[in-house]
Length: 66
Image (tube, rainbow, N blue to C red; front, side):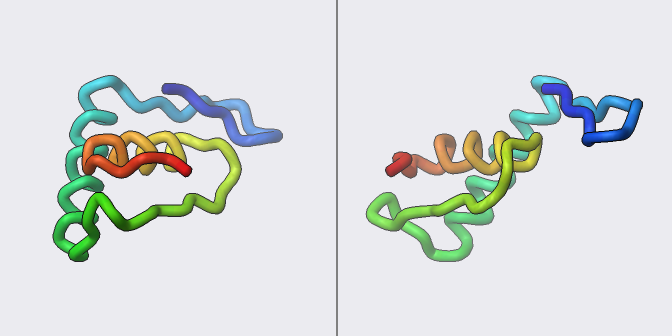
């Protein structure tokens, strides 16, 4: 994934391996917080790398989008 902040030249990049590691870490964090598949997660942000990683972490955790 790549993202460029508005008005800035350099691109931020996350490789597949980095995204996988982050998603698995987020999934583990959600489990450690005691969330179950019956719980919901709401993301309140604009599209970004962080938004995508959190979404992938929720998929890895087993949550479904509403």
